[in-house]
Amino acid sequence: MLPEPLTFPFRGQRAVDVLLIGGGLHLLSVYIPVLPLIVVAGYLVTTLSTIASRDWTTRFDSLPGFDDLGEIVRRGLGATFVVGLYLSPAFVTLLVTVFGLTEQSVDPGSITLGTSLGFVAGSTASILLAMSFIYFLPAALTNYGVRGRVRAAFDPSVLRSSAADAAYFYNVVVGLVVGSVLLSAAGALQRIAVGFFLAFYAEVVVVAFWSRGVTSIAAGERDGDRAMSSGE
Image (cartoon, one colour):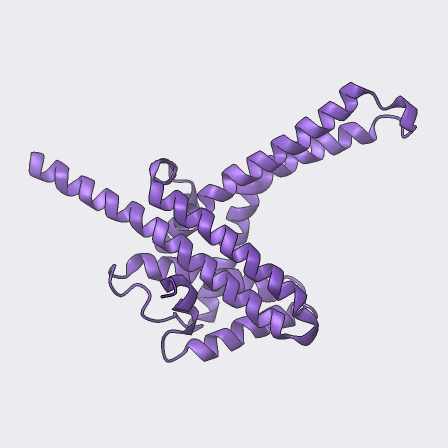
């Protein structure tokens, strides 16, 4: 039996319409840069927050639709800003590393062992920073989508909970792995347009996996609150 996140994009009466719109937005981004992908980002955040708000047993019953386009665009802009802030430390580290290397002479004979090690260390640090911040993005984006404020994406209590939750770690990693495989296949199929629709399917699958991890955090917090209440 397939995991629920893999079948989630096909559930609900509007599933076909949603997949066609999402894939169409990816295709449109070839001709109109950025804006269609902001709409996609907003929809994915909406999906994350919708699943997080549903009951555990009904969370994967149906896809949300593109009903409130204005709200989706607003969320897409906010999500783009949040992702940019989360990845900025890695980007700055890589930029400083590359800038430092370009300040050196381009003569191959002038490149020392220290220069090479510095570049490797800098690029490795930027990759590790990016991976670390990407790990917290599902929880951050869900909290932003639920509360509707960019500040909520940086809530320390939510980030601490995600760092300590094994189910969150598992679902985030599995989502990234599955998404990478599906997106690689989508890239290979873009010449026949199918790839654009597969790319949107892959993104919804990733979001569905991530939502399972985020839901596990919320469930753990509710259990903790009940335990404290009973103790009182």
